Length: 100
Image (tube, rainbow, N blue to C red; front, side):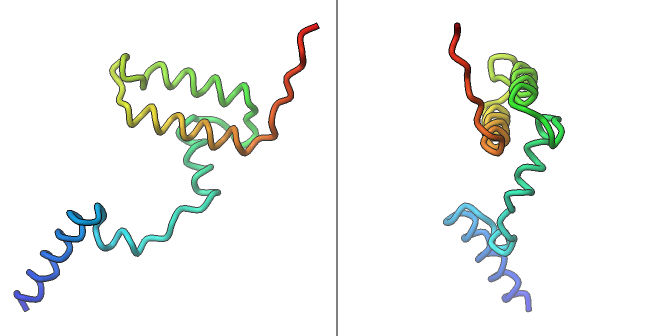
């Protein structure tokens, strides 16, 4: 029994080392689009009805704190940028009016 347990642990560690994920991470289903949108809204702290301006303002406010030059990390900025991009892609594109 101990040999089987040690083999399973060794195989798990090898899988993590060789493939970059633990074996049980392959069993988890991929997140759906709605889950990703929910996480992005929660991260930026905006409502479901947020428009382009609200999303950009929330991103600007949070990125000022999470920027690597301000004590944040590169990973935090990447997460904020991905959330902003995902939410903006869900909205209809803005039509910019030409200046008169």
